[in-house]
Length: 543
Ligand code: GLN
Image (cartoon, rainbow, N blue to C red; front, side):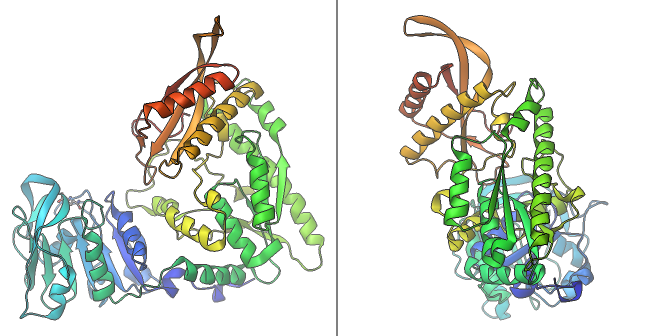
């Protein structure tokens, strides 16, 4: 195993990196995403990051927007070393105001009215001045649509700055320092409401900062496999839970390609999986992806512990989470004992986790971690009692990058594009007590819904879809007989980040077809409804 002195390099040491310093805007992470879409590697850190504590040097720095006003007593400010580092700096919204404030602490004022929404930006060019000034708005035409969201504004330019963009309402929509590569824009280039925003970010990262555009999943794979090998060493063994979801499948595939059978995947069949799920995962993992997989059938244990739990969703989640840890640990111990006995391998010292970059951002976010709304779906929190070191090969990646990585690694299409499925499984889609009979109903109804969605070619357009079983009974007439049976609620949402979501607008004929099939084919159901609640106030799952 590598000792700490010779740790393999991290992406920000390998790739040219643009550092985003986050002042707490809801769009901050989008700056990082847009840059990566341009194949420029980017990471985000809180605005309070001290530059002297960084072990690497960024190619450029972007200061994000934020909800504060720079002139407030408790407003956050960046380490002034940012301006002495000798790399280009771009301030967005609050970031622009922060730059102005750094130079002259009197020129940011509360405007009379908040400017929120689309506006038209014109470009001011300065042919006679330093060359860098015009570069930010290179190839951007006058009358560019831009998204604004601010209440404060500059009263006048700080000394040595020139205006590079303006709107009818904001005379300083874009500013640049006459000598340094230092820029501010009042609008948000990172949101899709600013269609040319990507051109601007590219101008900054590629033309001004001269960052290489070498962030591709192909290069990431090579680097990451080398990094895993170096971390784990020649004999090291890694264990990890897999669920059939995109993240754990891709993480497991990466491990398999790095260390082969020294990665041990464990699938716990909780009995709460969808129709044929355990079988499908087994087939894909062992046969198609060659992963060293052990399946533990623990359905009876989970069901016995869930018996009689009728009205408290948090209790359900806790029972499932704890039982999962117990079953996983027991299996891990067995695998570890076997591994230790084999001559060519060492002990299991590592635990694989499919942590993604949004989880990392969430945990370092300037606002602090947002309040827990629900116990987390994922099977996180495993290692506490296990005494294993964590290995998180996806921790630098966004979800869409994980999908591209999956394709790169040869994970089958249908697995790469799977909708997320929560750790507690169907248990949180069965409102009320989870029994074998309720599971059968939920499973059959869900299968019909998803099959119809696939047949209609809608699966990729929808972010997540499922059938839930409501804990009520309704009256119906079936075969001339009055029945009193259960109600299915269908849910399908569209979202880009799962933070907010809208219900998917199906054609009525589609919903009728699904409803007919469920009522006719699933014993015990006499009604089907469609949940049109958005998130917020709803959540994507029901419990
Ligand atoms: N709070 C500042 C303003 O209202 C900055 C807003 C922002 O960064 N979106 O002007």
